[in-house]
Image 1 (cartoon, rainbow, N blue to C red):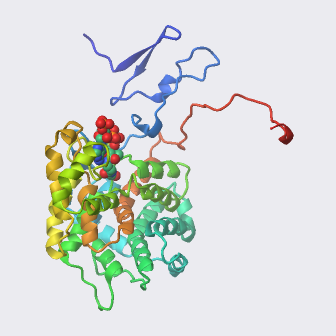
Image 2: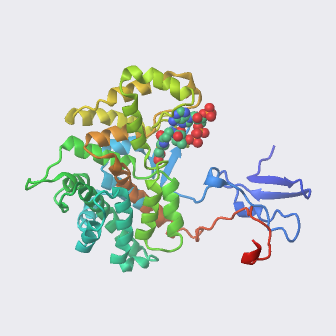
Image 3: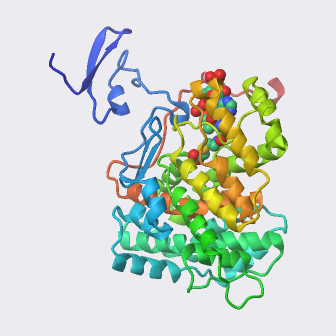
Length: 429
Ligand code: CMC
């Protein structure tokens, strides 16, 4: 039988048949538009709320195979990057497509390091937030405010200008995040230290007090760097879609990134690790795990940190984080929640309910425990996610801006409101 890379569609409303090309396992939604019942018909639409079966772009950045539990950045498995690379090396890879040579990495690191400071007015701006403002709200607003400090960012049609904004953003997000953290504690801001690594400097800005030179514990610095690697990109998720969608209007990347960070603020996206901590606290002890599992199976509770829209296998990031948790707890106080998490995982992975539904631990199952052990309040969790994801958002934005097939994102709708009717004067309503 001869095979053709096409799809034949028979419209049973008209009896007409159409042949549309199939490329990379997809048809073009615009090829459906020719399918009409008559000259006044707009043409067939694809209805896909939440984009569950729609590819919005071609992308060469991140690959996920959810059934096999695979995650690659630019073709490199996440496990290898987490073991051998630094976050800035991975950011370079994601943004530029190839691993840097030593010289390229040195230059990139120098550039990022020398853009970490923010204008003093940014600091004053942050001072204006309430003492109990949520750090993620401060982060989003301050990133948006950066666009007013860099009006040149509006010129984003040449790659030189884009590269400068990308460096600025990657460099400044840890500074803004750390300032937001110090603000909620009522502590003076600690300025960036150019002698330190990306993660080391972030820890310095968070935790420096009276010491002349802050030096993070190497195990903690590395753990944070690995967590940054694991969160750097995750293809077309909610916030990345926001970055592309907002950016498609041609707005500057600071404004687009504020939109992406706002999407990440939501509990369904950046807030799940906080929910895991709350769940572990409410379970209370390993002995109460079987009863909690019974409640989950009865539909009375949800096992937070389990299940994923894409991964129907162990989330590869969760495996790495689980291993790292031991290294972190060796240098911090061991978390009383860890034995509960281990017991929950142990029981759930053997239980028919979870096995048949392909519910495995996701990245959030252990990350909250690590963040808590490092001394972060839960409000900081989405901010910690936003720092490394900035590299992914910018890589996706850059790819979108350079893609000749992309234009302003503008979905269609199926109108369900009333048909045209005449205005009723106030006295007749
Ligand atoms: N605990 C108990 N049952 C669950 C869970 C869970 N965590 N997740 C899914 N199920 C059940 C669900 O009730 C359904 O059962 P049934 O077939 O009997 O109705 C079945 O598994 C399929 O679930 P679904 O809701 O159709 O799956 P989904 O792909 O729409 O949802 C999810 C994915 C992540 C929203 C969901 O698994 C969940 O709510 N998990 C807990 C929250 C969480 O950990 N979120 C973080 C995700 S990773 C973040 C990231 O990558 O950015």
